Length: 465
Image: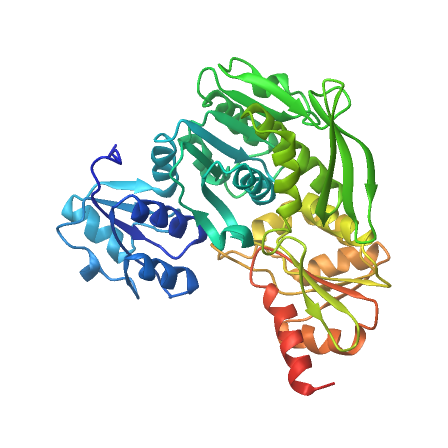
């Protein structure tokens, strides 16, 4: 396998450079003096930023973009052998790395590397821990799977030995990483288009834990069932959080008028003090305890933890308040696309001032929707009204005989009002006439459903109503 060497910068071509993770890695290498070129099917603010940093980006993708001076090509999982650039690089004998392999090689150049894994909450915990390290003036390099306002994007290039990155389990990409500290936030049934079942997913997380460097630390959510199956045979030490019996746990939790928690953290019975969040929900209290545990293991003071969490106001698309309609309804957006995440989001909304909660859900992939149909219906019933958009197919072509209307019927059978509309415009029309003063309109999903809320606000403003 081709090996990246920081002491010998080369020419790297990114096929699919506009993705949130690929663009971040490209930015890291630009900061280290590498020559970066790449392509994507469309340009975006991320590709524009890379251009400003010195990258050369092609659009659209073409075999002509592959030149003989390219030392290595990096591809996303979405790039298939029939891609013209992939085929041209293969024909030219250019070495190739996956995005995950590149991330793992970059991580190996940092003494204090942290990989944040888990089915849910990775972006939030990565962001919280990043804010803590920034407050401690530790100058970290950060790769986060969302836009973090505190660093002005999804990447920060530091000059210290501290590197923090999300570690995604999909296609086992996190198995390319060998961090010093590995976090496992939760293990749930997801990505069933790749994994066989929950047991298969648990085996992958066990392998991730075994990849943590000898003498390193695994920080594990104590609520994960049968944790010994995850920790068996690993070389790292194990720290737990999240239960009264764990090494780190929360206590005396209270919530403000907007559902944000204030709480104590106990470390093996010792009170580490009071911490306050600006993001809502009990799940974020758990996320914060995990970030504090990791920071403590890195030798960071509790005062810097407090300052970092106080500076954190949420990542984009994580219970992000988008604006207020002239009707008085508040528009919120969240990336939740699994029943566990949707439940956490809607429960957090329940602690937020409101009269009625309207949840606009765009299911993500036919495979996930079919496999988790009942879980989606049960979680969505927490809302007062559910409005469904068509399923976001992403990489899939087979609809498996289901649609969002199938989910609507399941929700309605449970006694919750639910509607399905075939276009975003019709959803916007419906909510602009039905959402009223004091209501919350929450767009939920991993696709482009965020456009619904943004367009509602734009239409509302343009109409002057």
